[in-house]
Image (tube, rainbow, N blue to C red):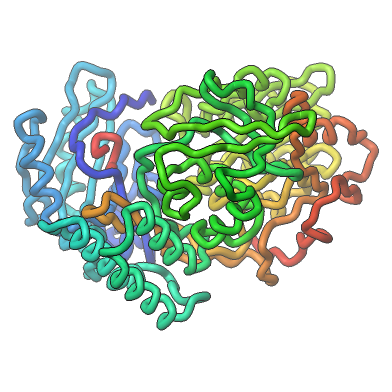
Length: 585
């Protein structure tokens, strides 16, 4: 069934959250309908339909998929729907309607394609609901009355109102910062699953009051640093303070096992690519690293390394931490011969980097197809099938289910000595996306062997990708190779957002706790540790794949250890089981 591209309809806020709690499915009238219910709504659907799929959306469908209903729920401020409709009603054909006695709105896509989407919107308290019916255009008339019948079974459940967006303040800069910081102190403790699991409540609130008192004397950059420290003090890598950097330095850095190196730059500074960073202005890189440590939300060293290398180019951080006091900064490097070289660099609004990874991707597979969430390549000579899983999201042009069918069709038609699943660039998304892969793998016992199935993990294996790695650990015989993960096995997650509209910033916070291990481990440690080093990278060598290719089919891979990792012995034991849509952007 073809899926049309979403039209741009309500261009205001990105989707904040999908909330599905306490789900219950039960028969109501066995021969007529079933009821789906969660903490926020109840809806009835035909009893001969498939069981709903519960995830970021709840999907109801006929067995032949001729009619599909997706229901989404998102937290916004009260009256958000009415305000949004007023902004777009002159541009979009929006029809007012009644949804089971409640005022709602209907938007129908144009009938000039093969697929018709009919959207119904209704809001209760601070919760916005969307029902999206999708069917073939030539079936629309047949299903119109059924769609109307289903949407009129939609009922609100009794849920608690929460404030997820700060209120706009008419005032000066100090008043705006004060309003948003007070909003954090009032709402974050209520919204987070367990905000004070590490930091004491009194300590957190004292920190808030100290920031409020210092607002008049601090610059915006210094306040960004202070609020970052406040949120990082929670000790939850998923609870973060985010802002849109106005200026950045035109570099890409990476934290290798022997230091931080420049990977990419604008052409003006290309001569420094491959050089090791010694410091910025009069601060050494070691001093800078410790200044950044309290402002980066992290639970282990791999994730800190990943985020530090990303954040060191933000002008707001360098200025807020008093590493520089102007728009420019002197970056000090050590070249390949050990000579020191420095360059004065001005921060800018944007970067046009050279993208040196493109040149390396043919020789280092993990840098290839970075714009794709999933792809595979067969190394004929080695009989090795490489499957890279970069993000836990469906792609618009090919769903993961379709990709998975193609992948296993290839596997069935070719001789495979090794199947490699690369999760090292995957920072998360929706964990169940990978479920079809596990389902097909279970049917092919010959692949599920520690000498044939390999999973690569690394510092950017985080969140849902971390949970995917644990599923490989719990349900397969895979051998793991790479670095310790940035994701923590037991962690808070399922992120929602608080929008701070006065300062144009966002707080991400956790709403659930995931316990996957009987031990509270900092990282998931692979069987074979291979740490990245600069020499390999700049010589176009992927040491992980190199080590994989060295493993002979007869070798007991799980008994191997590689690299001089500083993480100590393996801590693998103890695992216990297994916008609103684009048009709201």
